[in-house]
Length: 191
Image 1: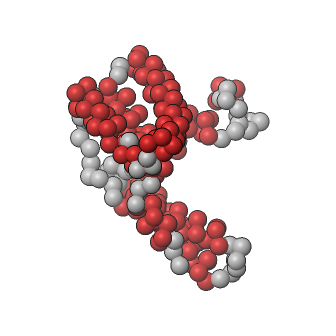
Image 2 (image 1 turned 120 degrees about the vertical axis):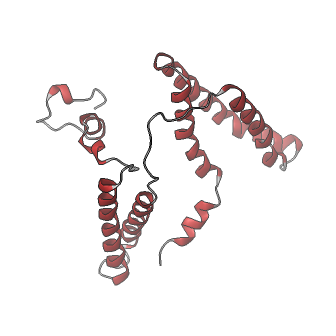
Image 3 (image 1 turned 90 degrees about the vertical axis):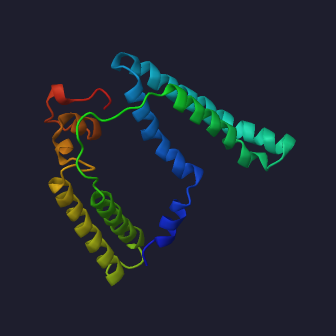
């Protein structure tokens, strides 16, 4: 059986799930709102305040539960959200993409999610019985869907994951440890 309950559970939007969606959105706002020379300071302030309020949140929540009522924990986000919306509407400039973008790539994320879901399901259940039809079918369908994802991204005019990204040396240098044959100019100082 496919892990439908996990997908439905993620759709409810636990704070952890929605919090993961904040990072790309806030970084996009920073990129659109600040000049390149100021972006470093803005990202530093963003990450610093994120750390401070990430640490203060559980502490203040505990104080509310201890001294006032546990029901206020569910209300605390309302005034913070209202202030955030006011600040965004008032101070964040509207940004538009200057070049024309092709049609939305709906098939790409769908193929990737289902493909990774099939492969992940097969790998999670492999200890039960490697040769079972369900596991081999899930693995096969997942791999075929991932192959379809690559074909879709290669053909789509506005792909979610442009395949040209895999040809960038900076991507490979930052994500893979250098081999002995890696030239010195391609080595990253992080390894």
